[in-house]
Image (cartoon, rainbow, N blue to C red; front, side):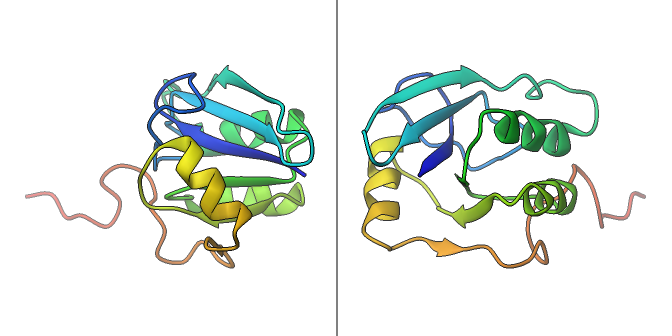
Length: 126
């Protein structure tokens, strides 16, 4: 299985990034061979649609699953349409997140309800 983990740096022992569409890097890991590589998130600085663009990038990398802290509704829809499983983690290093995934400690995300969306959604400005 090939998984993608959102990260703050390109190091597989670096810090986990809980934001899916705005993460700096994705760490891709083949759970069977333990081979990994990192890739900068091309959508990280997008003006809009970062979640959907990041989902397309992950799909193009042939990932079977992605681990992040938040999936906005558009990212969730795009990942689900691509057949990519989503798992939620809170914090830690990428390597500790991988260990939690492999030991079955992470919960699979079933819906986008209650997950982070765009900036300022639902807030009333005065």
